[in-house]
Length: 206
Image 1 (cartoon, rainbow, N blue to C red):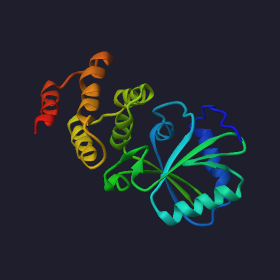
Image 2 (image 1 turned 90 degrees about the horizontal axis):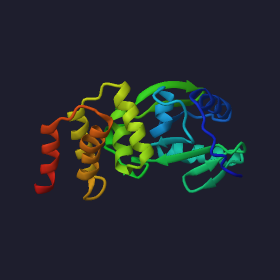
Image 3 (image 1 turned 180 degrees about the vertical axis):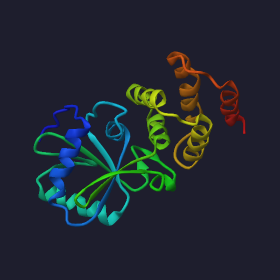
Image 4 (image 1 turned 60 degrees about the horizontal axis):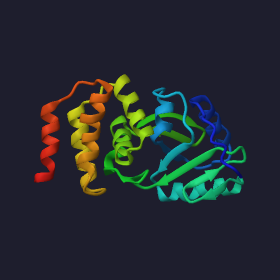
């Protein structure tokens, strides 16, 4: 099977969930990530693949068995449907390469059910954090969209980012944050919080 790299919108995404729900006899909680979550929340128009996290090991193994029985082709975390749709399924608290805080699931927002499938989205703060940790140009584009349309408490976001990165990944996490709240904010003509920027710069010296 070949991944067709076609963008899908929320309606098409929900149609896919509806189509597979008839084969699922146990409750499955799927937590939409990244661009998938932003598409569901109408913050962006479409996503190039479906990214979800399934926390429960039992639910994860069950849905993998269902996908295999449906003839989806597996390559690592990615499953390709017969139509060429890419479905990336993460497991546990590692979200797109970032170990989010344990309460990320509790902070998620319930969206809707399709039979036994319950769809949630991660909080916008955790979506920003996971995207910032990866930090490619598309991630920054998505972060910009979020900040333009939603009220995000920047100071709380910075604190949660710091707490997340301290238990997740390496030494350059301060610079990634500065790339956002200083460099990108200037580029986007967003207001700068110079006191907050100075506080982040002091992290390295502690």
